[in-house]
Image (spheres, rainbow, N blue to C red):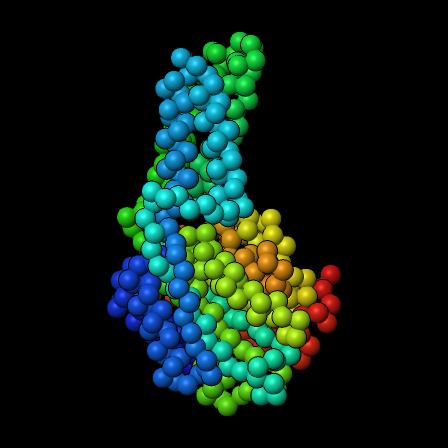
Length: 405
């Protein structure tokens, strides 16, 4: 479906050029979402279309990268006075990183700025029973763009991963040694030479992990998923295809880069719809479609800690095998998550299709993620696979799928 891939490329270029930076809750994010909504509305691709607002603190999710180095530095400065401060700072840092970054647990902090972000939900109803379809499939991408990961842009993915790993090691090391000192074990010299001299540069690197003042274009991550999801509705409308028992929807989320806030808000608001016993629902996340040689079916998500639905994975296996001759390999994302994780955590069958080098690619969350760096053949393949997923789902749903070995 080359024409739909070229359509996606054209609109992605327009969004990047016209609406500015799309930080979660920004005017650029809302205007870009409004543009996609207008495309759906003018084309008559959906029977119903609605936007759903939610509150977000855009920088709250990634602010741990600033908080941890600061409180660890305070602990180091006061170490000679009392090691208890550094022990407390280390334990707090471990808890913060675990709950915020590994588990994506979100706590609003009153002093941080709140903004309004928005989801777009467009539905092409089933023919037989439009109010209570037998099946519902939701294609989804996110409209917001990420803060730049400074270390990846300037130093590459190896330095990025090394700093992240050594930060965790350093904090654990500090916590253990400080606990020993508080318990009366004399390890001052060991701590001074290894923990302070060895790990302080790493904490400085963590402080510069993200640049909150530089929002990338996000052409691949994830306007590709956005326009493919909308493009499925476009294809169905232009070919006058309406399934008897399957409702087809496109969900364009906001604030994904702020901790999956849009997907989580949508699940909370529409839980009754999504969990209806009358309708089997499948959430299909399409994320960062750029590297054709690295198409992956995510069978796990959220740093590998959330298992995605086995039947949904098997369905995507069948679809990718139809289109490409063999099923895509299975994998997960680390570090990070896709919107599929938010649905899976709520007990809704979900799977994710990703087309990016997992190293990660040099454009991942950097200023290189531009509309000039798109791959039309890759978008075309993902679009073809998405249509095959739709056909497989309409034929048998998720519960009847047999997981591949």
